[in-house]
Image 1 (cartoon, rainbow, N blue to C red):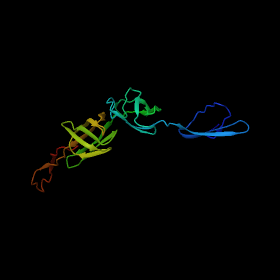
Image 2: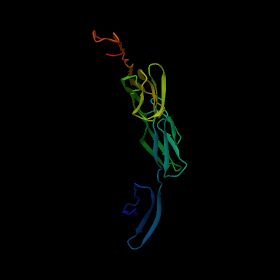
Image 3: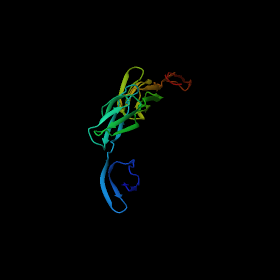
Length: 239
């Protein structure tokens, strides 16, 4: 008997196929004088296969990850059994874990996708504020810097020590200029995934008033017979 190019002289051989498809099997018998040939087609059914597109958890603790499974091969309809007990093709509301799935087709052929789906969590954002300066009250300005780590764009709320102000849709690093005195701190930060994170840092802007120059003198008028003039500095704000 010839099985897929392999000859075997046993009367009732067995053969294990390592691929699916259709294979020609030929049996030749003879009695030493005469011979006969029989040919048949052996069909080995293909098992389905699958690929998984993971959707990571947006923020720590939200468990909003997912899986999009695409199946090919085999014969539909397919059934599914995930390691978490779900039986749908796609999954949602997943926490960060590793998941397996068994896909079975209409012929009962099954494929096991082991450790094929890992849901991870996006790190929470962090925000840091710095900068500031000591400036004069003459139109000078100081710069405030905001740096963030996470998924842009970011929305932050900051305080100048008197009121809270919002910045939406910013990238990192971000800076702005101002001449408003105060201690600037971050109140909150939210990244592009809607995740809120930790904030730190501070920036101080000190606005010094301008000095005012003034003086007086006497006597006035003086005369050449008594030419001494006395001056008095009346300036304010000078060091």
